[in-house]
Length: 92
Image (cartoon, rainbow, N blue to C red; front, side, top):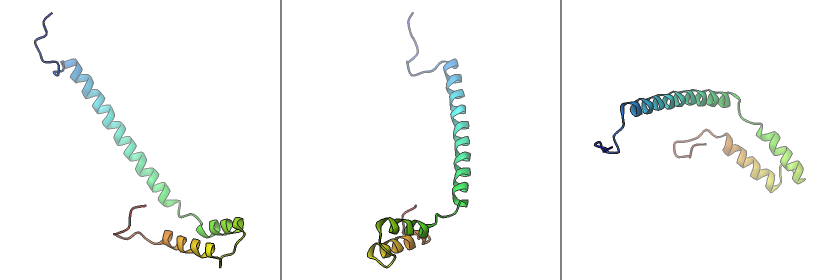
């Protein structure tokens, strides 16, 4: 049988199937956006970790105190983590 239409054309049934797939994908995207939003709220509400307790555990494992170079470096790092982001800082 001779094919008279170009290969890139879709039949009515093919278009219906593609539209159905597109609608399913769109619905799934909306569901994932909602799930992502809920997860972001959950993470934000969980609060920040206890950086000082983590610092103390690390220094204890290193067998050094808070006044050591390592302790001071960790304190500076913790202060940086606790700073609110500025317009020029990269997103965390």
